[in-house]
Length: 259
Ligand code: NI
Image (cartoon, rainbow, N blue to C red):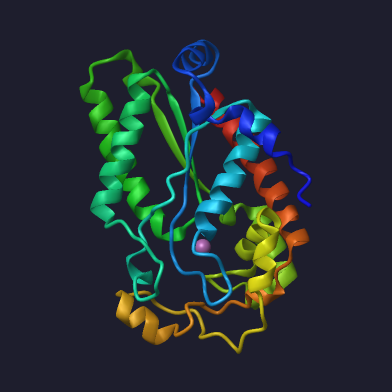
């Protein structure tokens, strides 16, 4: 069984706070974490919600360690190239950009000055960075002193150097680029029943370019890009969560102090 406590993890959830508690929190801390994932195919053995489940759990762990509020997870992301596989639900880049912008502006209006986005999906990165640029412009137009101190930061848990190094040492080239054993391992730790869906898979299609969803399915017929998720297990997942949470807690702490 997972050693983290669901009760402990729930303590910094914004959705369980009242507005008066948020007002009080803002007296002492202007930081907030926004987890974002995706709802998309993860090969024949991986859960559709992998990127959201992983970002959510890393964010709660970081929020709990740093004492920073965690907003509800944005479970839909930019997954246009995965639409050739049933169950995938995607936002167009322009939709995601507007959505992120609106959420960040909402937080800015209450006086949150440091927004730390913990992301679980590579396909979201470009759009989130564009949303930051748009948000800075909107905040500067608000003509509030906030404009001088408002900052957004994007971090990707799977790209944390310690996580990446651990994945390479456990799986080598079989880490691949999509439906990776590292992300699947974390879902197995979080949702132990997912182990029932695992079975050995044939050699994956090698990782390569990404174009539209039809091309993606032709190039990567079972949805994987160079990965062997059958190498994953829940114990690895626990290690990945620890390494990601520990590095990102440090990262967040210095981000909060940044002038
Ligand atoms: Ni993923």
